Length: 206
Image (cartoon, rainbow, N blue to C red; front, top):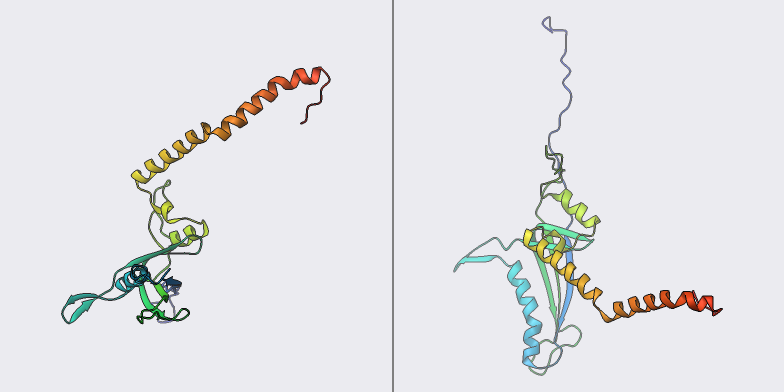
C-alpha cells in the first residue's frame, strides 16, 4: 500500500431504499329514497362530507393549505394509517336522472386514498418482550394479513375494559337464556330417566 501497488478492498454498503406503496380507490352510490327535499338533502350529505375532507383548507380569502390527513382501514384488504384523498370523481343524474325541479336523484362517487408513507422497514427493539413496537408499514401489512378490524387497533385500557365487560355480560346472558336452560334441563332429565327406562327393557335413542 505504501509502495503504490497495494489496493484497499472496501465492500459495498447500504445507501438507500425506496418503496411504492399502493393506493386504495373506493366507489359508492348516494341515492335519494324518494322525491322529498329531506331525502335529497340526505343524499347530498355524504358527498359534501367527502369533498370537505378532500379539498384544501382555506387559510384566508385567497390562500389555502394542505387538505386533511385521513386513515383508510378495510379489514383484510387495506390499512392506510397516514393517507390523503388525492382525487374525487362525482357523477350525478346518471340512472334515475333529475326530478321536476332539476335536482339529481342519484350521485355516483369514487375517491382515491394515497399512502403518504415512503419506506417499508421492520422496526426492532432491544426488549425481548416487545420486538415490534413501532407503527410502520410492517405492522400495517401484518395487520391486513391477520384480518385486524378497526376496533382491534384500539389498544387503550378503556377499550380493553369495555371489551372484557361486554364479553362477561354476554356469557351471563347466554347462561340464563331460555334456550340454554331448556337444553340443560332436557339433558339432565334424560340422564336421570335413561338408566331406569333401559333397565325395564325400553328403547333409549342415542
